[in-house]
Image (cartoon, rainbow, N blue to C red; front, side, top):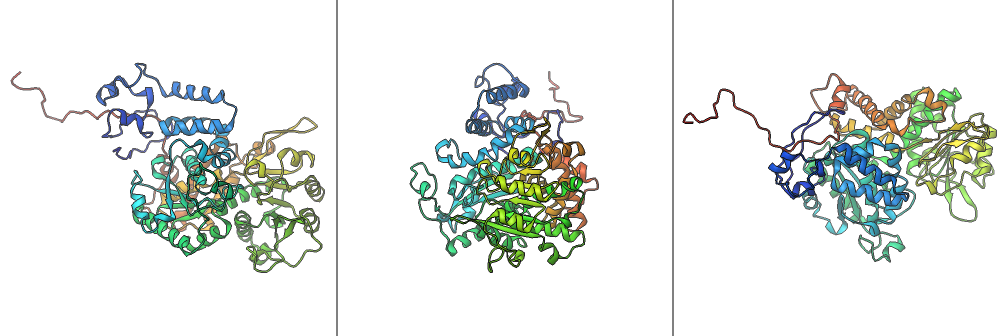
Length: 583
């Protein structure tokens, strides 16, 4: 069995480091943690039983990366690129992450949204090798034994889903495993968290997706989703088993649970475990960061904004609550801040859209207001409420119609339009519509990527992508390195402010509300440093002694993609003559 690789290497260090392994021969090549392909040296091949198992050429990682990139460029279909990339990850982990990190701008949309959504819908049809840990409700009472089957024993971060609300695609059951796998790819690529410390988990309690229940290639339980007490008991057992096996400070990220369960579990577990929900808190932080970035353009503080949401689910409520916290930090009362927030939800009927904040008992009770007037559509809501910003998180497609966008342009000199639903087909509007219908005046962000837009006057605007990957990898790295037991919303407020501060004036002038994705590794590391400083300053960190130089500490723990030597370390004993005295 491969022993754990404990060597922590600074980024960009090319010095060869020894990594101890008991494996030899083909087992080294079949393990993605240790496989170097044709980059095994001649001595490694001879000593470790690899000679003859590889072609005689000894390649550098540079050549391997070049081959990888050339093959990718030959492909035009995003799903085929996804399959190829995941295949490389299954064979050679360090090569996969090197290529991903070097072209993160182009490849993040492949390994994560929007292509990962397509991959999830086709999961049973493109399946090649299982990734992550599958726990079904049939395993209840035995989850600790299931965790014991995972080969890595020093897990620090778990991303778990039950597949009920995958992106904007709905209930995909175990096909949702692509989401935890993709998230943890970004933990490593963006923040340098060691991949063997990450565990993707899919909890299978059935699915209500009729298409999957009729699909012969579906890979989960052929049963309706269990919504009884057994489900809650299963999640309780899972949480207890994780901390029992890996420790109380193990980070557990909830991902793509149904709205009702997402809020319940966050409330239930946040004071008991080291956990957060990225759909609620990560989305909130990245949206708030974009809103904070607009201050440098519109010249008004966040307290002067009036925000209208399309959607009232976990993302909307997470963003709204964090905006309220930001307003309170600037001196506004909670009650007054909540009056600045309005929510509308999609309603699939002839009416189209309805206001949910005038109904008692809804999910957004904290943001209930008296009826604003005659409102039958989202356009009516815009005209009556007169928001400075609209934020779409309904996952219902193009509901920011041309009339809605034009109305925002008439109401505001610099309208703020965030179409954050994923994947691309579910976005509330396109970047081109937002810019062209406001004559380039709007401040736009989307959840999935859109290309640059050329206006009639020839100017080019680059839309900002409000990708949660700007937040969760850096926060996760900080939490892991600080030994945090519980994660408060103030951590995400700090992360949002840090992200907004990293946007340069030049990038803002290009239309961006977030730094380019090509800078995301440095963005994540700086965020981790700031959050580590915050956690120690607030007494939330439990790893001691406290590092004096937080920046150096964070960067010293970052995993890199340089190959390690698996040769045994050879050395002499001082003062000992090894040559026989009889020679």
